[in-house]
Image 1: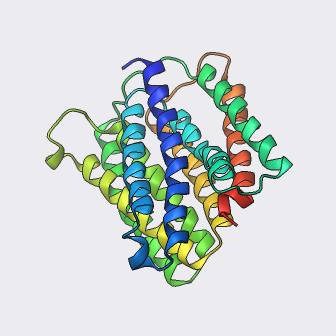
Image 2: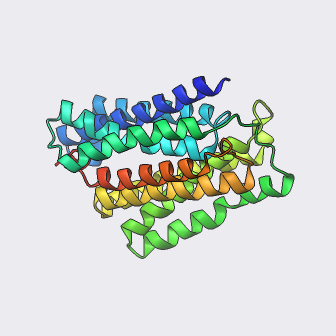
Length: 264
């Protein structure tokens, strides 16, 4: 797969995540209550779109570095804010418009900074470490959820989703997935992140929880991808890549507190 096609898939995943959030919000507002919400077509469509977006991001990770894919996916908050403004007539602040613009510029710069990537072929010890890391992450999530800290729970959810991204980048495709530890770890990381994020949203405010989730989900796996999986940056573009990731994270933090993102 060419980098251009992979980047298109990642961008499509971000759009899918952003629109899915609005669909789920529409379903939840139409008929509040978990059991009733689960029967709403809009909510179910949002869940299905989430799954499609996740599969697109996994495909993109086969070619692109983790830092690039995760930053692009964080741009889904910009999609959510804009879509909510158009569909739900949500209020859009001046700072939100600026954050959307920063996201677009930062992701364009990040696309230019990412050079050709070799397939991730980490040694056996690294692969085993990634697979086993799901255990302490899940235990940490269980501990912070029991202590009633929604923001920390959201942060650990981001760590779990980041672990899933690293496994997707490192796993061997195609191959005997039933006997591939990283494939099982990917599924466990994804399930852990989903459960923790749902718990955090149930007990906390969507803005801070989502901001912490994306900050951790972008930064932690991005650093790990460079150190462990050989993700690289185009020669001379490292400062641009670092600045672009930082700008994306900052914009995500702003957009997570936007009225449109909270559907107020």
